[in-house]
Image (cartoon, rainbow, N blue to C red; front, side, top):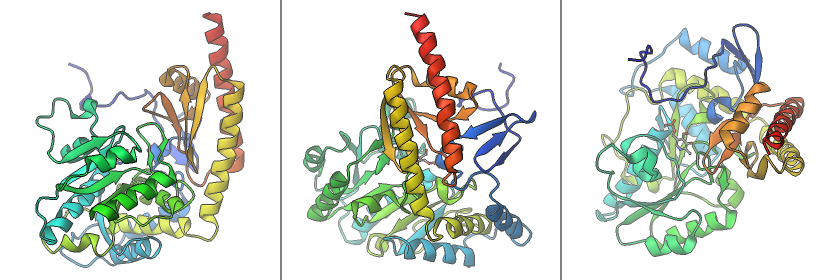
Length: 397
Ligand SMILES: Cc1ncc(COP(=O)(O)O)c(C=O)c1O
């Protein structure tokens, strides 16, 4: 028997950290790592941001939890602010991304139920998608490695090739309730859905009377330089699932919807004990204070461009390591020529953290508050890592 008392579900890297400061993670002995993983696109304002800390500590001294039996003013406020800043009219708060997706899926099914069309319950999704680890969201993601061994796949999800409008239209049947898509696939390998494809999906949904559900769990809350990535395509979705960045490290998510899309979600049909509790709402409101400040999102765009340009230059210099640079804003990645975990290890040796993804990609997801100097620092560390990898691989020739 292994010594650990924990489930053996994670292939953890043997590293631990004692504290974080902005874009840095610091070990007990003082060793500093530059954090371009940000807890997998979660630490949107970096570590220990004073405004978030003050909001959390302030709330912790007043009230932690009361349940959704009562009014929660912070929930009303955060819901109102998210709706005012987006396409949405209604918000449902959750504890995680998968739960925000569960709410989105239930919202779509109840929408058709409320309109008297019980048969419309199927959701179209895309190959390479990742929507979470609950039984419904693994079925939605459609990836064998996550579905296998967990019994019958939850019914009602049909998958088509990523971004293929023709195949999508061909797959729509009288049972289809919605299309669900990530504007940028994160786990799938920073695969960007072109704006015209997203517009095409909107048109398909309108033509067939079905809902467009977006998974912006990773791409939302400023990550691409707009509050939501779909804004770049100029479309209005019906439902958007959000999590990760909205809590800046506090576990929370939210499902946003138009009034019409949410029309089937009436009292009693859905609920959660913890979702939207006062602690989470205090932090979520604090995150929005910063992200919605004038000029903040423009700065994210500028930094994203800067990093992407520098990555493109690195890709030119090290074609034996980097095959292609992908992504928008600060949701970037590069497809590796060498195994991505080998490249990740070499970057970690230079005290730079990133996240692996599908298609042999490494994701670069720094805090949105990253400075230009920290971007330069990260690129210099990558350069050293790529140099070492190149030398090692040429020695092996
Ligand atoms: C696009 C996307 N959807 C859903 C999820 C699931 O979120 P959670 O792990 O908070 O349940 C993730 C998590 O990585 C994600 O990246």
